[in-house]
Length: 112
Image (tube, rainbow, N blue to C red; front, side, top):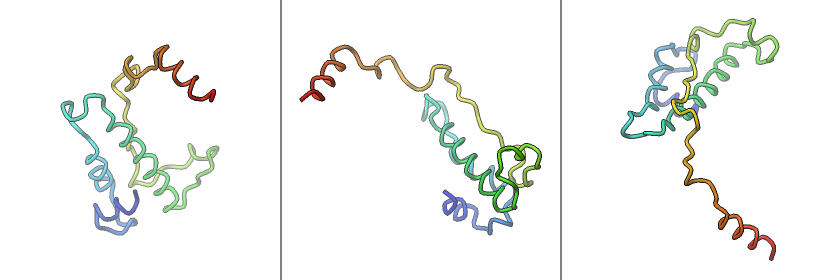
């Protein structure tokens, strides 16, 4: 992920700005017709987590969970929020669940 970020922005990591990071993250956004279940939000959030951890390490901020809230984030990653999913029940549909026939088939196969 970091190599892709570096190639996409084409700068040294120390020269990155908040705008550069947001520009990279915006490439994950998809419109409603392309991704009706908003799966892109999970990818976006995973990248935010990795980028924040990396820039905290790069700028020598503590990764200790107890002191993390006391230290300010580096300017390059300040106020970059994770996004909330729009679906309340997740991305699974009722048809994704196994029915009784699937359960029996699974149990029969594993008993042999």
